[in-house]
Image (cartoon, rainbow, N blue to C red; front, side, top):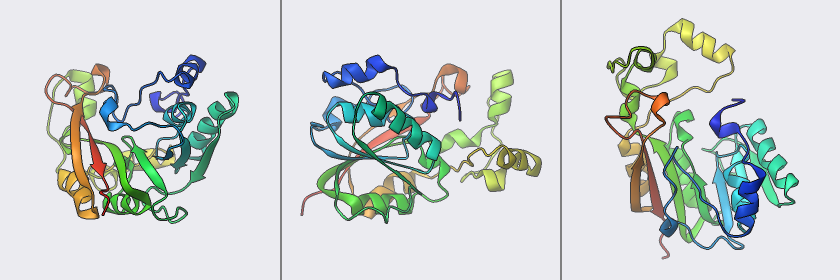
Length: 245
């Protein structure tokens, strides 16, 4: 969405700093990815999966990676290309569904960077399987996702009153959980539909796809975004490894 934090390209000075080796990346709203999770990016084959918007992709390219940005939104991809062109950076952009990477060959990337976005996917299990397929042995999948407990609550009421009221059973789906009028309004406004996913599918799904979970951290949202912030982290991120045989 225009004006959204995740759709606002980075400032030129961010790219300038990345060109000198000074940069950070986020999988979740606030906490930077640990340096220990990130390999040397020089000439690294890197897939940025569903994270277009002119932010992470051009930063990684400026840091020296060979970046492919794969996103379902042509607008988000255009922002990646805009920033790349502005700074004379080389990137590849591909439009498609994160659960279908059939355009990409087996074992062609050394790192996959997948910030919080599978909240827009009805099923996460195909995403993990495809990521495992396109990742080289010894490579890493870095993923951010929402704690499914977030979707239990009536967030409109929380924002207006500060009260946390459980409203929805899990798994949550806009298609099944929203009243018909709200769902119609969301579809007419061309807003993405959201889905919760169990930790069994988020974490266990990665291990069943073949990954080894090497590390995990949690993160909070901004205070104005949810009344849950004082009580629990609403995001988490995992580092998953595809071991060499």
